[in-house]
Length: 313
Picture 1 (spheres, rainbow, N blue to C red):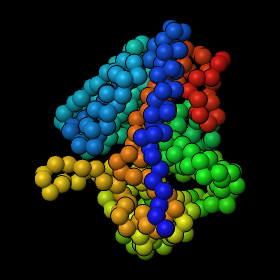
Picture 2: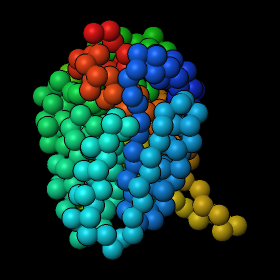
Picture 3: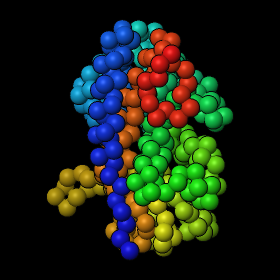
């Protein structure tokens, strides 16, 4: 058996066309859309993500602001920078890129972001709404995971409800921006969901859990963590990992948390890295930014599944 590779770039292209229309419609209604990103330090992955968002924002017509700070920034200075973005009428969405340096209390910064501009749902209010199944914003990476999974099931001719109701979803990684939201979205689909973190890898081994998964979502941040012996023969594997790896010529390439070469011959379907979850995540972040602008303008309420950014009021 050879895995079907789920093409994230194709799905992102379709979403991008819808996004352009959404941005144009919002502009025509006088709804101000603008994305601000905040980066502290020079983390390779975060900087690469920022560059992709900058490029995509220009392509779809979303005004873009970037604030970059050195790793010596104080917490008070970072709080002040976030508060300035909160106060700006030109900004509808704020993305805090991570990791943050040790002197910064991440939870304090999360609470500082205006909940109505918190497009990654890290503010306690938005995280709580997501956990309760009534999200204001669905974090872009977790949303993209399930968008790709849902789309694959549709294309395979499977009934989504039937599939989820009989399936075990195992999520490897418990980050606030991917693992925990993915668990909530699995619950929302009434699947059986199991959470695995680094301690399983260090103690009993992740294979004890992952080999039973019908859907395996891997967001651990460890290159090549999941290998053939960790997956079942008919699993659908969603690889969220983006890890820089040095090529023989000294260049950098991105690799996932899944050892694609060994896993692909064994599973039913697999998202590649690059070209899987990442491209959809970029577009979804901009979708959330448009949604945030419309929420602030009073044009739409909380959509149940966020399949369409634009809902009439």
